[in-house]
Image (cartoon, rainbow, N blue to C red; front, side, top):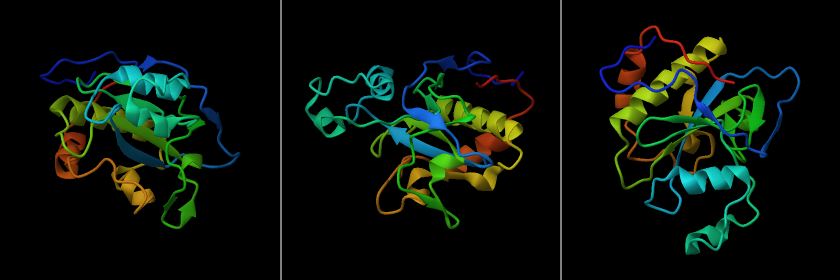
Length: 192
């Protein structure tokens, strides 16, 4: 098992099945990890509204900023909350709808070949140590499952949709994340 001085969470992420998913194209290798940030409403870091959005049941009347989300069908494979708990919404062998119009190294439609990981966060608030640690742990588990993934294939949403997306944003410290990734030892995590 992964050994950390801080609290360790279950070897299996909490799973909540999102209807916003479909089959990956046949013969396409999963080989990219896309990191995102999400905050619903802006500046608030509760799973409640994120889970409702990914489940297709968000009450858009609950907050004025939610009006822009009317009829939006979106999901990610995973969300890492502020305490480092991992929530899974789409099995990794299926396509989650997280990247939108996107391209990486000349290959479009990143949803076809990527796994999407959201972290509860925004551009104004630092991410937590638990998020760096558990996101790195999750990435290591995914890299073990998909041999074509490596640390050079972990990118931000802003990298695959420049000018359209900002996340994970200026608060995400890539150096801190890569240090966390380098310090992950042997561990076991079961993802669907």
